[in-house]
Image (tube, rainbow, N blue to C red; front, side, top):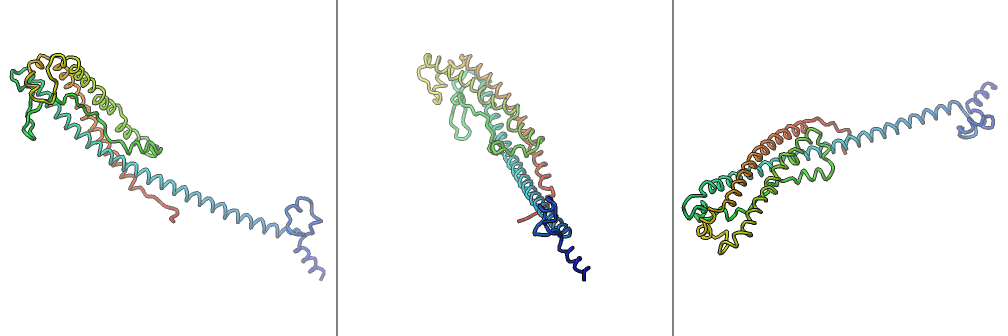
Length: 284
């Protein structure tokens, strides 16, 4: 009977008043039991592990979701750039055709400049059969300005870094490369120099020496054709502008080839991205 009583007392634990200050702090209730203390530690540790790994998995799933979203955004950007580069190439090809037509037209005019006939400055429009003078439109010019909306949007929203260094280099070369900058400069500021010189000649010389200035009147070029044949400044201006157009033609050819090569590179990158195996840890 006495042994059973001692056993019950041991199971109930030691009274709190008999404990030291440290055990009193960690004791719940009025008695301390080693078994109860051990059970509570074990339970707390298990709960901690459950919470810890639960949070860890949640962060992992969230992180995976963000990476998947970034990957999808990256692929979308690459596809958008590839499509815009196709537009750039088509724009360049159309510009090349216009440049070729203009060079042929004004080169023909330059070669026949000194011919002894009144219609030397007049050509016949193949579309409607009417005469016109190329010099009537000599003050026109068309700066090279390919589309770049997608590229600017990617730079603006800060996702350009997702493209990667290699992709970023040839994309930047397409949109902001040195060759493109010189091409845009030649078709804009440099060509405007010759246009301004032509208009200055009209304003500062022709208006004082000719009766009536009407560049779109074919009779104007017939009536004053000998005057214009002696206009060495105008002929020299055309000669220099033809040289610029020839240079632009070479730049267009190189740029069109470069854009075509970069389109193929982007196609390869996009194909690799789309073939990547993506494992999704969690799907809502």
